[in-house]
Length: 259
Image (cartoon, rainbow, N blue to C red; front, side, top):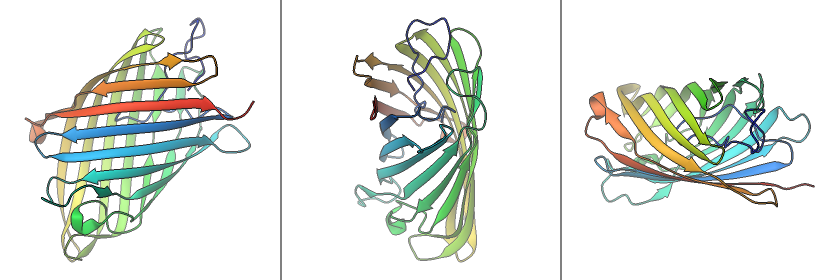
């Protein structure tokens, strides 16, 4: 975002989404954001590129529309190559606060369309709904915390063999952001996921994953109102994911489209 988190700051701090965690700041009126995230896990050999575009909904500034397009490769499906994943259409409501307040809360509801090929590990194989609850809290002049809790429900998920079952998945996340400078941040993100895979007709198998991800991001601000934010992070697996290492490359372009 291009608004100030701390009143006394001479320059607006960075208020993009974190790399793995959603921040609870909707787009300002007249400002659009384009986000690219590339991620790779070395051990599992998973690759993913996600493009997100966030728009303020016409009318009251509390409403935001966005979509996610993902290109990915699942390491479990050897030789499947890169391909389109499921498409996500998102609506988010700024229920509490905004980028200028100490506390902000912006629930999101998403519709996931089965554009990815389930038999190649690129999607759920069915329409799904997803909800996420992002909460952002300013802890001090140089510290901000973000918390996420969410779920994904696919009543008729499908595996590569065509078997279908109802799938419910959960996610929790947390991040600390150190505002070392208005244009430079240090992040520590924690992400936990409880996922399910279809293993037979009306049968699922659950798995859990926990990652810690230190990272940095920095901003380039232009007089036109354009803000470019690159970032890097290195996720590390914990528990059942111990030994897993990854790389996340982040790039955001945010600019006004009205005057």
